[in-house]
Length: 227
Image (cartoon, rainbow, N blue to C red; front, side, top):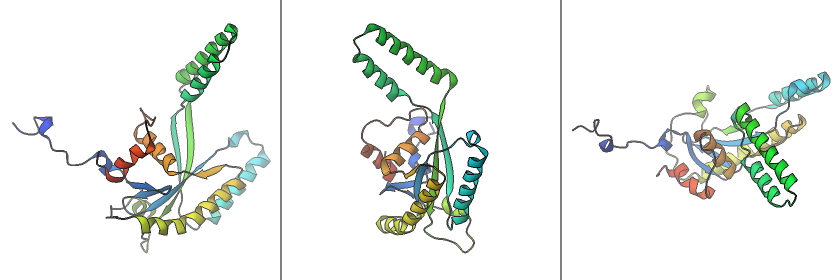
């Protein structure tokens, strides 16, 4: 009997982690397997078409100012997922328990059902907007951003020096981007390590986006791919 006819005898030559570009998440930074390091900034959005003509022009000039001020690469990413109202529904349940009037409890039940049906039937989506600022560990004479950003894997070993070098370059760039976004009236913040783990977990596990347990339980597979 060959190993092809018996799935149990097929050797495992690679783990899922081997196919990911992420090597580690450390000090709120994303470390890729090719040695590049990234800061991820989450930003709010604005409905451009609801603004007046003057406000639209102001946003356009502010965005042009942001682009013209850049002396480094950035990547804009939009992540769309089904909206999660579980916390809100739990809040309603807790609020209902505090009520003594049966009529109020009844109205809460109706409201809770309407909210849940609205989300499910209309497939309401939640969009998140991110700006990725990379620190390229090595820059060729004629750089190709895509090839350099997701280049060949490198033997990183201890990433302490790499992270410290990346911080020196990335922190001023982060502050500059946040300042430029604030001129556009947008709120922004750098994602911390726990936020990054949650983000990529939801991207790679769209059907089971909730992380259970402590975040520390998820750093093992991300770092070593041992599971």
